[in-house]
Length: 190
Image 1: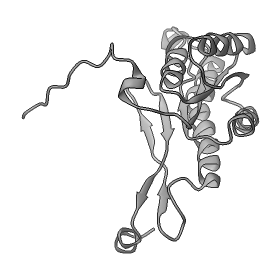
Image 2: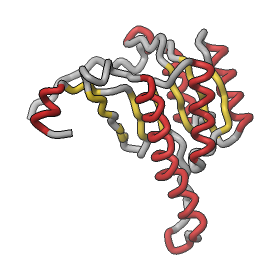
Image 3: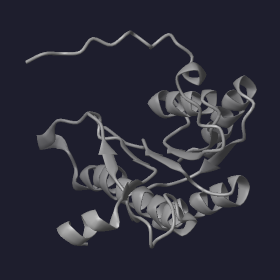
Image 4: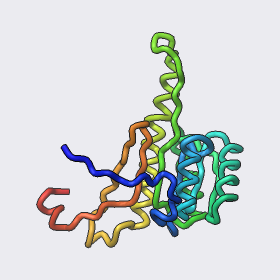
């Protein structure tokens, strides 16, 4: 098995690697930690970013921090990913303020450190509500808006297929579309 060596690009500014100018992103759980880091890198690549977080003040502070560093539109918004109505409101704000949604990062998550034999049912219900239902709520809402925007071309030329991308921490990112030719769809079904 052969491997391909890649240059270490971790210290290279994102703007030198790619441009997300004109793209609109939502990051859940973006008020701190990995979510805030993702929001910073998206803004560095010139995407407009809505930072959603359960803590309203933390979301607003993160947005102010990102906005101070990069000259792009950044909003902080209180969002409870376990509540589909809250997720819908955040998406509606992103669409109203930025004109659409191109990137959705489901980063919100909770990870209580409790031995399994001592874990109360409510703790498990909370984990599932955020880490599973929250990902579903965000992905579904993002897909609704991305489909409504018609990303990827006209319907008679391409069928749009949303892809959920999982990483090792369970974070899911719904990004863009994969265009498939009509011939491919005819041979392989819908």
